Amino acid sequence: MIKLLPALIQAAIYRNQREMTSVSTQLLAATEDTHPRVHEQLKRLLRTQNTGVPLKEPPQNLANIGMPTISLADVVLEDHLAAEVQELVLEQQRRAELQAFSLEPRHKVLLEGAEGNGKTMLAEALAHALDLLFIQVKFSGLLSSYMGETGKKLDEIFEYAASQPCVLFIDEFDTIATQRGSNANDVGEAQRVTNQLLISLNKLPSHTVFIAATNKLGAIDKAARRRFDSEMSLGKPTQALREKLASKELSPTLTPGSDLSKWVAPVAALELGNLDALVKLCRRIRRDQALYQGAGIQSIISRAQAPLLPA
Ligand SMILES: Nc1ncnc2c1ncn2[C@@H]1O[C@H](COP(=O)(O)OP(=O)(O)OP(=O)(O)O)[C@@H](O)[C@H]1O
Ligand SMILES: [Mg+2]
Image (cartoon, rainbow, N blue to C red):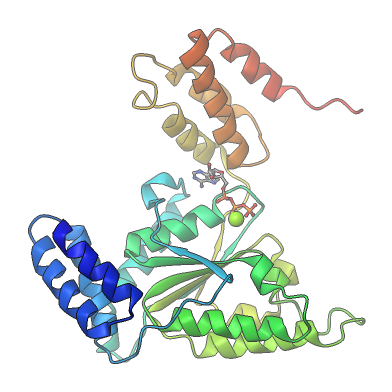
């Protein structure tokens, strides 16, 4: 199989479509028994290619594009959200059955909630569960200093994402889908961008899963918000959720030879700002265990508990 790589890379460099298809087909056969997951990915890629739609060039400097590495097992979610995520995954996987009934799978998801509770993680994990390319929009590239450019760039990203099955993720969505007419000084640029966004969302095919995240739900344009098939709120974590994540972060598989389970309850009892802070605290505990046999753990937890004194 490795022997096919030079031919594949050469075909990519010289944009030789026919050679690329031929080598990919050989790879498809070679991976069937040995690497089923890679085999499935190749099959899907070749299907996209065979639709006759030329594979588009990814837009330069506008997005980070790659296969996702975070999986759904890494993300701790409330039960009702985990169930909804599973439904979305199943709808994508069973699209043919839906289409037989003139239905499309849901594919536009708005993630809402205060920072550090897993919105970005969940977007990537969804791409992982669907085994799709993860396209994360880069703000620096999108918010152009040239007037009128942002809308054009947005269109470019959506066009690219629409050309293949993938997950397209835009963070800080409120900065793009601003409520029109909310700013009297607005010279029209923000309005143009929001209008462009609505057009792009309307024509997005259902094989492109679009995920937007925001911690300012109220700032989002109402018409843009209505375009979503599903809204999920990753709000302030409950005690049960904190306990679930603390058990995971302090599990014996991560600390071989030592038992940190007695710290799960005190950690989960802390009302830290968000799950990000909880994960960081657990990692400090694990570091202390690894370097000092846990001598400083009690003090680490007490300090995390102490309210910040006014300066
Ligand atoms: N639900 C969760 N399950 C597991 N880990 C989490 C979860 N939420 C947050 N974390 C931890 O916090 C980190 C930050 O989470 P993430 O970047 O997904 O938050 P976010 O909601 O996208 O925040 P922001 O609004 O700032 O973009 C993660 O890398 C992970 O370590
Ligand atoms: Mg984020």
